[in-house]
Image 1 (tube, rainbow, N blue to C red):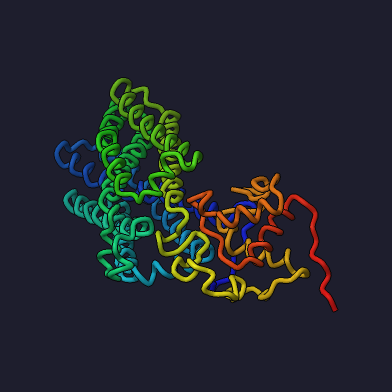
Image 2: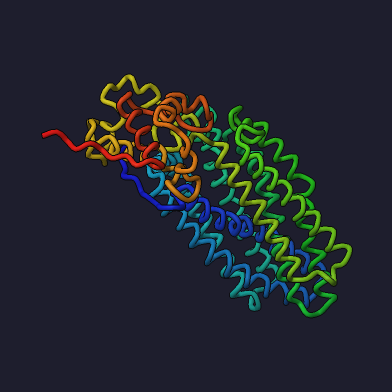
Length: 436
């Protein structure tokens, strides 16, 4: 363990990452899908020459630019900051594997930002053909940014044969790369349609509002048709344990998966139906409801996607507590135990005077990545009725009882110390004074 542990009370590191990442993912999917909308809307104007629709497109693009370039960029930086502190080992590994991939993605991101800024601020002075070219550049750069990021995040769950070949392309074009890319692409397009519906409701002229709402609803159709297909394809490519987690090994994840699917269907079906049945009565409140459904769908999908990777951060390579599988898979090889390998821990040998303190350190480095003491996924209520012996017995078979949890790493004394600490969370225990 080469890095100190960043202690985040109540929330825990995993939930802090989830909060920032979900907000960023929602906006980033809108940013990618919005490129398709801007380009195709410009194409629509080039054929119809509807100046009222063009005026709407200008106001839509300005709001879109402010939301995606400001909030999207800041939250993206926030993700880098948080993952580097919560999971520095995993972050370092991904950077080493995908260094040039990240560099290419940053180039696409810069092109994307420059294109949308020029598109908005030069909207009136540019010829329609030039505007369309800028919209196309933005669309292509934004989607290529998704293309790169998709390869990296899918690698974390399905590394393919990278760990045998050390080949960049084996890591990047992994088993879930294509289904995830297609799935996210249609989701991005649907998000662009919902956002366009939202901005359309602010148009006072009924005929223009009806036209803009109906046009935006067309962006929901690809997701309604293809999203289930790509989702099933993605599911089929998951490792066996990941599929088991989704289908019932974890009741909470099964609930989240059902919420995600239900929210997606409500978002798409309600949006399309209302847009075509009563487009003039399409209200801002209704679009906010669609945005809530869309956000719920994507948030729960991302939570499920992260959860099915358990007990790993990097599948079959690094456990969720940042311990490398090959280094600690057989702790009996190192009789010195787990604490001896902790660079940022002063306790190296356990006795009666430091058992609680040692258990607390082991808990921080082996458990607290997922379990806070109190708060999100709190450990205290989970072990409330456990005896010290039961705590120790559970640690002995931890990954057998719960396949989505890492095994305990350490010798017998360390396992007893952690069991002692877990028992102390609900029972008053003190370390014995050291002998002099």
